[in-house]
Length: 245
Image (cartoon, rainbow, N blue to C red; front, side, top):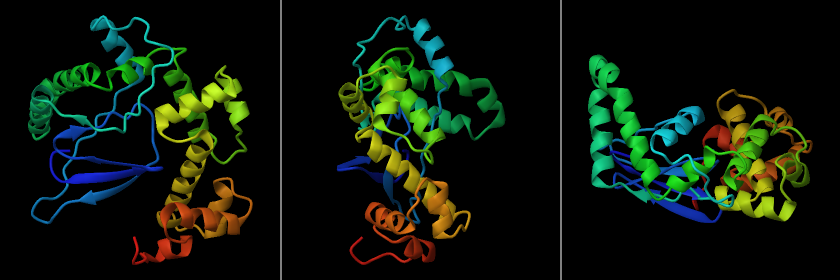
């Protein structure tokens, strides 16, 4: 964040991030956000996407490609303080993005500098764990890929745990440590987020959106949707917002 700030909601967790903090999302997390900005100071933020293969190579250069604890997990959605060197790199990157020549000549190097500081920061262990096979973090990441690619299918915690070679209790604890929520709650949040996009962005009827994300009972879907988003699918479509939100 370079201007403005956000409040995020993930289950029962509430977190804030602003120009003095940054997030490291080592796995996709379906959380809701409130954006706080003004006409005079609109929201300005930067998202850096790092490929796992590039992360692995970078860790080798830093001589940090050795084993990390198999249980290494970190809820990256917890904001970390943006220290001076990383802040300076972010500002230099934003200036470089204003020029095609500077972007081509300097952009990749500045991105590597930002990644370097992120690895050395509080969430560095989760990035290192993500780059390795066999860690709890890596196995949870594999399960998240399964959920995001097959959210409309019938997925059970037992099957997901077996797929990554973990017992159900250990898998459940590791999943919650990484994402802040249980596997089934993550699956539900993913389904509902996708259904919301189908309803609002693609204009699908509620029943069809429910069917496409794996709900057989439209009434059950509507109840879950309202519980999760605070409005019914119909009210979400019309833009109605209740007074208590």
